[in-house]
Image: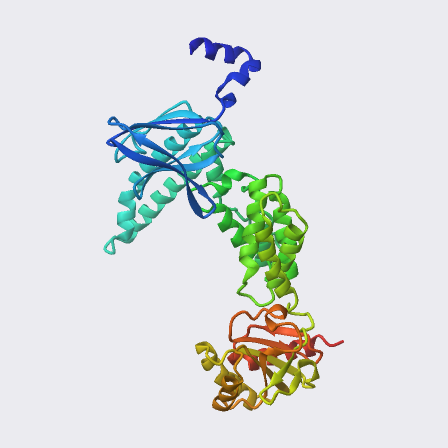
Length: 472
């Protein structure tokens, strides 16, 4: 070993023979207190955890995990039964030994053969010491009988400790920028926003500064960020889209494409950035943001960009949802519906001449519909807006539909969805659940979707005010 270290010290050429050149992984553990039991090696990925390997501890608590392929870098953990024993990093060095005593794994951890683990556990021990120092001051702050000068002193002491911890973390980042613990600290660094320059709007300046520097300490293309104990990647990604981007489809599409472009240099982060957005906007809570999902499917799946991991079945499922949504996006002209009413007469959506049309998809047996329909009837009977309702029953039974019309006093156009002269409404509209409401203008353009009936009056009032304001 001495000769080996000497050769490395004098010749960088021999770097190919260091631990970085070793293939696969060989993780050895000696955990005093464990004996003759099965231990699992787990890893984090996003918000999920997975079992990677299994080992059997001998009577001395010795066990190991070996494999021919290198493990993905990130935070891993040991599991005994249903208990997670402790977390540890796996970086470039994947041939190392960890020794500890149960149950204080962190405080007495000994590391051989790996810089990442040494830095990681030293940092945990450092934080444990600072927490111990902070405890008396925390007790003073929690004590309702503490005098004002005691409280002030305790807060000042805690601030000093916090400054010390932040300085320690920055020293780690500066000295070992590629270490996993450094990446963790860097990813969690706060963005310090300076004072607004004189003569500028303070709130606007702070928002623009924070938004433009939001990703300063976080690398969207680093796969280590996907494999941390906390789902930092997902949290930062969603927080940015939810709180720093205008909740309007075109703005979100622009920002998501920019984030995905940064993540694209690594296949894992590329996949994760795209898929996180797909899940987020497949069933959006804010009206109109389903346009984002359609864009994501077209740009990343229909184009073949995600073919390196997405199979045909997944793509077909995504396509079905995208095609359903694209037909009924806010701003599009609503697809025509031609169906039979209770008298078996053809009723045509496009024939309705009113200023506004409310399409109401319902099911006579639907419990929620029985609560929503009276609210829609009340709106219809009391509103001053020029509105007609085109109600579509999802049930094949005309008898049920007729009874429902009578029981609910529905004096509008009601048709039977299955008795259609057009494509099934489920393929034309995002109306897989009932009740579902769409609002159309005179030209049958969709101006709202999935509104509750009790908000229709408010929506139309606001809509007309905006339209009046925007007139030339």
